[in-house]
Image (cartoon, rainbow, N blue to C red):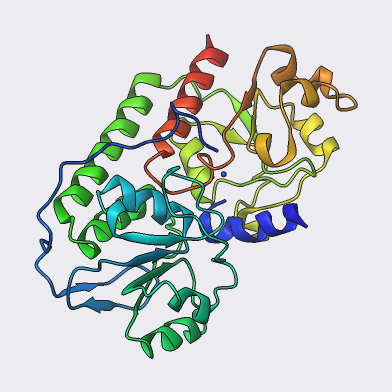
Length: 312
């Protein structure tokens, strides 16, 4: 049930635990309370526009990616509750609220003036919360890195930290571009398999995650001629992976499912894979490798190091 729940959430948040070195807390420079030129109109891509009359002081985040971004732009003190899957940063006020099945009554019990969610397809949550005077900001999963940077800026604007949001977007963009440039064309002759769980669910180049790998020129064995098939999240087979013999295997199921280089090598026939024989099994942080949050630079850095090592 845990696996199914996680896979259902992946298309919404692009679906990838905290360690001191992995957690990104940039401690942005403080901005004056009330800054941001309120009222502001927010127009997120793929979601309704929202006007905020004043800076929100009680924010509920039901989006793990947005929770991380809120703290990164300096709005952490305004966050009063986050959903059960918002595992970072550690100090976020985590609750058992659900972003998958949001309960308006339980959300309202936190007395928010702004609620941020990833999806509200029927508009019922927005309508229910509007009755309590609470604004709802829907931030769907971005479809590209540029869309992610735009969301960083939007979160900054929505919370009265406009400059911090712009700085975060530029800093993240610059870090990623440098990592890619430093790696050069080392990945153009390499193939990879990205594993979401041990039943061989994967991602194609059509997904946000797949686009990160595309930056390095890697060939995705899950594309199979149609990257858009199965919504970009196909279930492969052991035979398919063995036949493709990828140079790199990226495991995004280390925490959820206990997978690592040793368990992969023990799978029937997998000891013959190039990735196994040549130390190309890469153990990822599930969350970092699935969220469009500032820590995505950690994921990109891991990919860059793995590509450089495999190409050496």
